[in-house]
Image (cartoon, rainbow, N blue to C red; front, top):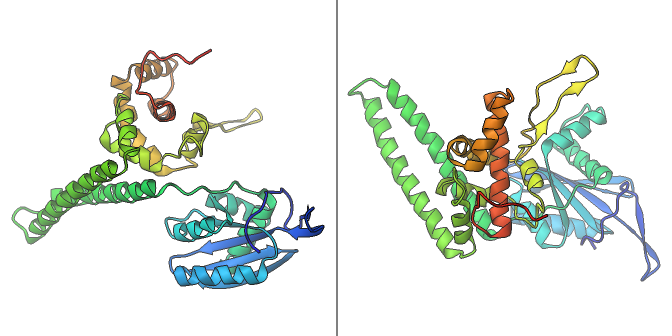
Amino acid sequence: MYKLGPTHVGLSTRRIFNHKDCSMTTHAYLGIDIAKRTFDAALLQDGRARHHHFLNSAAGFAQLETWLRDHATGPVHAGLEATSRYGDALALFLHQRGVRVSVINPARTHAFAKSELARTKTDKADAALIARFLAAHQPPAWTPPAPEQRQLQDLTRRLEALQAMRQQERNRLELAEPASLLRDSLEAHLRHLEEQLDQLQASCRTHLQAHPPLQPRCRLLQTIPGIGETTALKLLAELPTAQQCPRARQAAAYAGLCPRQRQSGSSVHGKTRLSKTGNARLRKALYLPAVSAMRFNPILREFAQRLLERGKPKMAVVGAVMRKLLHQAYGVLKHNQPFNPNWVPAA
């Protein structure tokens, strides 16, 4: 049996009494070091670690399931680092089979390795490290986004990649000599990129129409001054739901928009900066809308002016406005109400 049971904080050898059969159940911790084509797994149980190497494919996932069935004698808590999209399919596979899965910020496991004074870094060692991290810290379970949100993520991330590519080609075109073969090539590629961008934007609108819950949420976000259609699509794709983040400040922390203070004793008084420990795509999506909101959003315009009058640096003000803008976006989605500049929270 490897299906997850209740969560219990403790070491990997923590045992839980089972009243039904008066036996003892041992939790197992599955650390996974993911790569593009393969992954290493370490199963920590009863103070002993087993290792195995698998292909990062459907066949490898099936082999992992068989391996767990053969060796795991209790509920399994699996964990892997959030590294690009390489681990998404495996995390979803395990989640669908009832395994508790945690997708961990790599900064946490790196810090954990330093706390252990780890000297070896291999795929096998990293998998065992993640298993020990799970046992020691019991990170929260990962909830996969809905299929329509995952598809919207794919579309908006591809759109962002093509926009970056278009800007690169425009920069090259400025340096190209007139009437050169290079210039002809760049202009042809730019025309192709423009066509692809138009098709992707049309695909995003088609996707919204095919999933009715998304379309009104997109319109709600656009009632906030400073947020247009492109930003609304990115927020819908990247922002966790109210069930995953019950409070707006949790959504801000997820985006890495919380302030980070640096102060110690009487000699260290560092500047307060954004933590940037979170979803970089959300932060990037909110930057230009925040600059626009400082002019056209009545609440954020007054908020920014107060900070500037207090002597706050311009970029610090922009970061604070980004956080407030995310709070507004979270609020209209959570309460399913359009933006109201005169809204006052209930006492």
